[in-house]
Image (cartoon, rainbow, N blue to C red; front, top):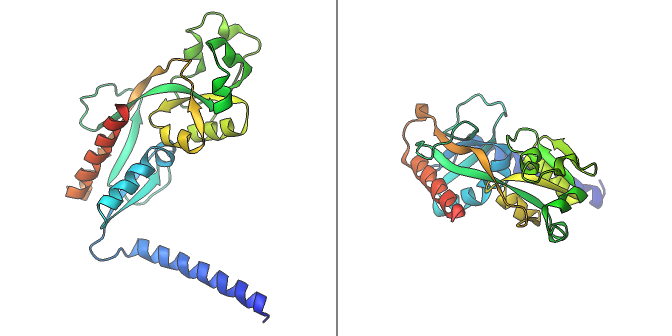
Length: 234
């Protein structure tokens, strides 16, 4: 075996060993390590949650949080789930986490070019299919705009997909805030202040599954996430 092939072989072995080590660690947690499983939507898992969960793990070194995107098949019930409910409008719900507004987002140069609402007809407008609030809701504020032949509205499946398409094209999207905040920032996109935000329908709430017992650390995580949501609102 040549030296080059030997190096490639050893590199492959190292990658495989690291994968085995990682899988073993997930199956057999370290002694005194507490694991919390948390299910959330794709948007929350990719945007709002990572920064907060990393901060929580840093503050609690013996805790590891397994973040799972909802709709992925699992054989066990999670400890916690963050859900969005279009019908749940009361802030007094015991699991309430945050409400939402919908804001217009685009690339910085595109946002700077918008001086009034009529300028949005220069862009592709991306609608997320699952959202109860879309461009039609916004356009009703501006009589006649919905009938503009230059208007192009396209549907996409998810908010992260809409944001990626904005990053790569001449487009705008209406996205839920603050749930989208960290992903918007990570992609270098900006919120359009010229177009006022639209109040959202529904709220995010945290659901705790009682079958897992009342572990104090789970309650602590819930309270820290609620605190982070309140601070984001300020």
